[in-house]
Amino acid sequence: GAVVSQHPSWVICKSGTSVKIECRSLDFQATTMFWYRQFPKQSLMLMATSNEGSKATYEQGVEKDKFLINHASLTLSTLTVTSAHPEDSSFYICSAPSGASGPYEQYFGPGTRLTVT
Amino acid sequence: KQEVTQIPAALSVPEGENLVLNCSFTDSAIYNLQWFRQDPGKGLTSLLLIQSSQREQTSGRLNASLDKSSGRSTLYIAASQPGDSATYLCAVSPAAGNKLTFGGGTRVLVKP
Image (cartoon, rainbow over the protein chains, first blue to last red):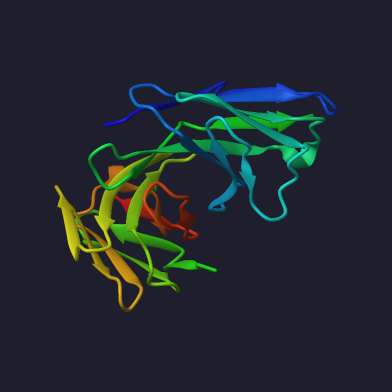
C-alpha cells in the first residue's frame, strides 16, 4: 500500500519558538493532504486541508496564522506551529488520499508528538 | 454537519471471543467508510475500506458491514487475540479524496 512519512516523529521546543513538521507521500503524488491533531485519549480532529499550489483550507476555530501550511510539491506538505505554547502540545498526524484507480483510501503518517515547555 | 459515533467507548473481552464494534453516522451521503487501528502513541493503520455502494468487506479475521441508509457500520473481529488490543476508529468521507470525519474510537482490551 501507499506510504506516508512524517518528520520529526517527536519534538520538544520552548514556548515562543516555531516548529516545522513535514509530511511526505513516498510512492504516490498527493494534490491534497490533511492535517489532524489528537489529544490524549481523544479522537482525531481535522485542522486543515493542504492543497498543492494553493492556500490551505482551515477548519473552523483553527488559527491560520498560528498553524502555517505549505504544500509546495505533489509529495510534500509542511505544518509550522508558530510561537508555540504549552497548549499546542499534541499529536499531529497527516494523511493523503491515494486513488489513481481505486476508492481514494486515506493513508496516514506515523504522527509527530509535539511537546512545548 | 456529519457526526460519527462509536459504541462502546471501551471493551474488554477474553481471548478467543468475537469482537463487535459499532459505528454510526448522521449523514448517509458518504463516499466511503474506513476502519482504522491505532496503537498507543502511534499513527493509524487502515484495516478496511468500504465504498458506499458496497455492503461489506472482509480481510482475514476482520469483516466490516455497511448499511448506508441507516447510517451504520459494524466491524467484526473473529477469535480475538491479545495482539488485537488497540483503539479502533471509524471514519467517513463525503467525496472521493476528501477529508474524513472520525468517531471517538473504541478501546479494545483482549485478555489472555
